[in-house]
Length: 409
Image (tube, rainbow, N blue to C red; front, side):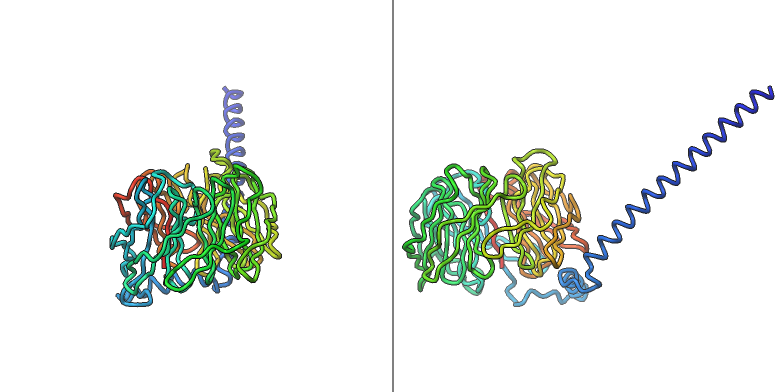
């Protein structure tokens, strides 16, 4: 009996020692996780001087006092494109003072859509002055301009044919407009005149790196000196120097850091690119680049989100955060952009979405975020919270099956 008692005591002691050691290890792991979280939050807060965080507090304070403002009594507006086969149209919503969307109008674009997803970012854009909207008509190879009145309503001004096939993305800077033609793997520029008239620019037609590159987006850099195009099939980023007459030099092509570069936006003078990784589960990432002299240079590599098919991207007003829709994961990731351009994942899943999230925009008030769901045919409305979080607030439904693109002011 004594031997048995000693055995039981020994086993009990061993279990206690093992449990104590395990608890210490767990406590140590928990401490490391908490320290890492605290370190991330301290970095994001920028010692309390992060303006994107401050704007959240300001908006919430105004809402709590019943004085939430958006710059004018008429609010702001959100637009998307039906891309309907045969007859394309632009759908306009008024953004009410509480952030909800109110359907306002549907205006014919003067062209036709394709009746299916374009798989591109920037199918429609608004100029810096919020006076003109431009949209592609991918089904008939044209681009249209619309005058925006002070109530956010659109009037079709002009439609111009492009010298290429399947325009999927458009970008504007001052009086210059460039279109990306996917099927013919080229870009083309137009000079914007009075009344929204678009005139082709001689010497603006330039080829991409090869054929069949499956390019999803074209955009001017913020200063308008360069045009950038991502190529999904070749894992290349093309850059084109803009000349004084509005035409561009032949492209320079740089290998992307991250596979299947898709959508991009600019943040704190850096370019943030989503990498769809061919849609592979858990393989998505995003990369921050400098673009000095038109040559993209990755800053801290492809930063994994562990999501599937990150494709569309939008940055906040002051460039501290980037939100990426993960089309195959049905969620949104959030990243922090440091002062030196380093990219850091904050939330792999900042919010869930409806089915097939594609385009995403941050509203003019820097608080409301809207994303388009290509398979659910809905627009999700979110509000920003501290440290990159998003809270779903509502949904606009019954969009056409082929709806693409989002633009707001």
